[in-house]
Length: 263
Image (cartoon, rainbow, N blue to C red; front, top):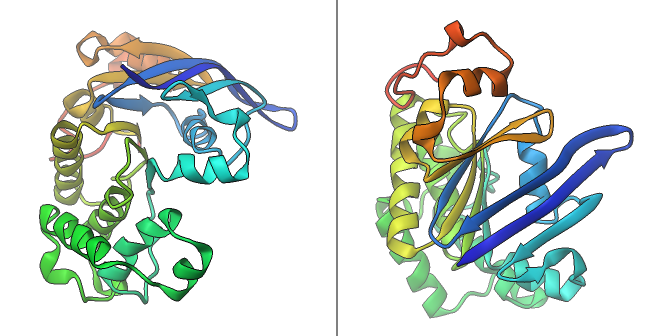
């Protein structure tokens, strides 16, 4: 079953064409990695899916519903089903880990309850359970500005999970992390997708990581999809085309244990 279907998506920023007739499909529980150079359109794609920016044309269907047709209240409901994980974490530094995680429930609450920070016992229990899954239970009352980068990203994952999402969008979630922390984050995301049947659309610079963890890879160059297929079918010549480099410059090494490619 398709959770997300994108049809002929195009986005202009004034005269600049950022996405050019992009189409792709994401099935339930599938991990799809989007690779490409900086400026290729990867972040624009994710922001269109979440309607943080408006597409110029095309359709984005989430579980059969065209999200471009949603009004304000329906869009708010739609976003509760989609988690977002950012490169720079987007946490509230002075809040505790628990408070940041509970922020993931804001879309499910009234404006007044959200402003007042009123969460139910069930929501607190859910947050604690998620923190345990991410090995963060002992950090629950620590302020987020006291955490390491890897811990902060795990808080970001926990915040997304308490939304009870059916889709998680990840925008370069390991780009700011050391190799060991990057591997841990990718391991957590992989287990979450498999155990909870959550679809993940993830932007990555590291081709090796995409090959290791993704069920499917989408390569974007200058806003166009130039590859969409099984990781084992991604050959060096196609990677060179995606990144605009020579085939001899392509080296598939384990980026979670060494240097990342194409940073």
